[in-house]
Length: 134
Image 1 (tube, rainbow, N blue to C red):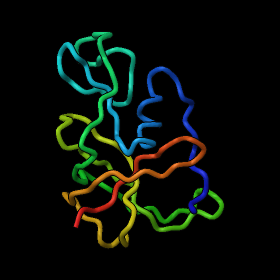
Image 2: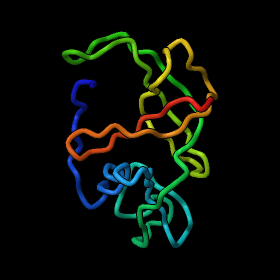
Image 3: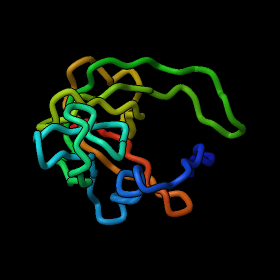
């Protein structure tokens, strides 16, 4: 078990994103008017300012756009090293998630690696992490 992650404050804008993992789904805000996705979650579409938005389940796959290997133990019992990555989501143009790559040695992570979402639950929050796709 990893140490507790910082807990986001759930609100109207972000609840679907932080709890979608309970259904095994990564949910990103989608605009029904212009068809674009918005992340981080907002109450208005960042592209057309429409209020006609809902959280929509996406594939939960993507590629590692960039990453760094962290060696600093920022919290008690935090195991280092670990990977902090920016993942470009498949089928969700322009949306990137900053996350951790888990389930493999840090040396095995490379730019462009295909990944899929896995969720780590802590206190009802489902943190979207990613693992490499074999």
